[in-house]
Amino acid sequence: MRLEGSTALVTGANRGIGLAIAEALAAAGAHVLAGVRELDSDHTVPAPLEAVRMDLSSPEAVDSSLDGLSAAPDILVNNAGRFAGGLLERQEPDHLQEVLQVNLAAPIRITRRLLPEMLERGSGKIVNNVSIIGHAPFPGATVYAASKTGLAGFTDSLRRELQGTPVSVLELITPGVDTEMMDQVQEELSGHSKTDNWDHVDPADWAEKVVKAIADDEDRLNPGGAERVAQLMPDKLLSLVAKGGFER
Image 1 (cartoon, rainbow, N blue to C red):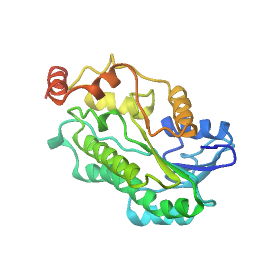
Image 2: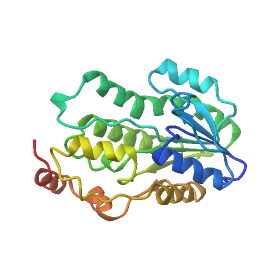
Image 3: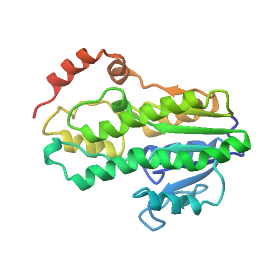
């Protein structure tokens, strides 16, 4: 896919993986609409990114945010995410609902809204950040895993549904990346798993691979190392590994 001169919408683009992907797309010549929760001093983005309000907290907020976009995206990167960790019975139900809304319901709604225009224009790319947990669900993150396995299913089904059309789908099976969200993951799981020895990938390095996968029209970007091994493990073996590395 040609990136130069295209318009890309990246959700969750004011920090972490989203910001790195947005900056890499801009460096490749794309006009990047950097989706942030609010247009305020806490959610700024560097030039040449264009900050746009993308509130994913409810269906109505998603629709309002999309109505305010300054341009029609050729590339959609559903990256924004929330994490909930720890034992399920100790987590706040309202926060769990927020995780499902931001991680699963919002990407589906955004895609549904933007897809008709992509099909009509005759080109488009939908990129979904599924995460390694979407293929190797580990304990201590049940609802986060539910949101990402759901997004993985949506991504696979949509890819097959769009075969033969000018719109394609890229699934990002993102490994552990050195971000604030990963710090949160490690903190919330520290009482149950040994998280201090987890490997982290640099956000800019992962973003470079993402942009190359978009340009090359890949349909999946896999992680390397231990995450790739976990992704390919049979379910029974993965359960044994998880049992050995998790304590209630």
